[in-house]
Length: 88
Image (cartoon, rainbow, N blue to C red; front, side, top):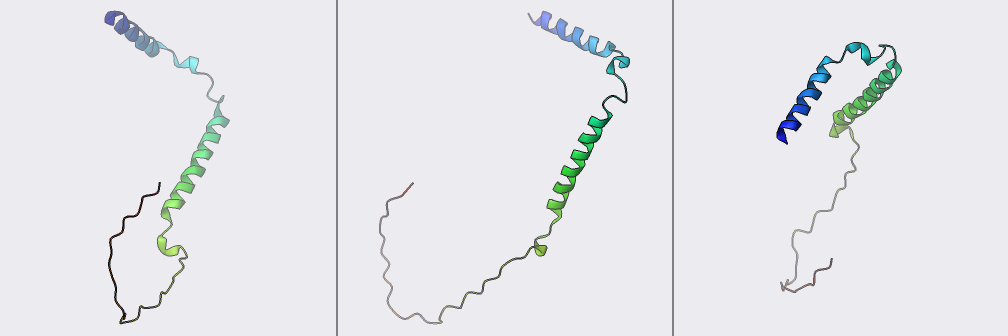
């Protein structure tokens, strides 16, 4: 069985090497499809390049100032361990 598969693979590989380039078609035939693929790749590449080059310092960030806690907290704190049922 292996000999048959290897023989068929060798024949298919040899046949692919013997194909003549004249069977590929005209050079002008698929020009506009190639142009469309190239333009699409350029647009995608440009958008990916620009999204990676944005520095975080250019983005507007809202800054919130929280008031400082009072220096002394008066009172008594009691720490208790209480079991809380998990919710999924």
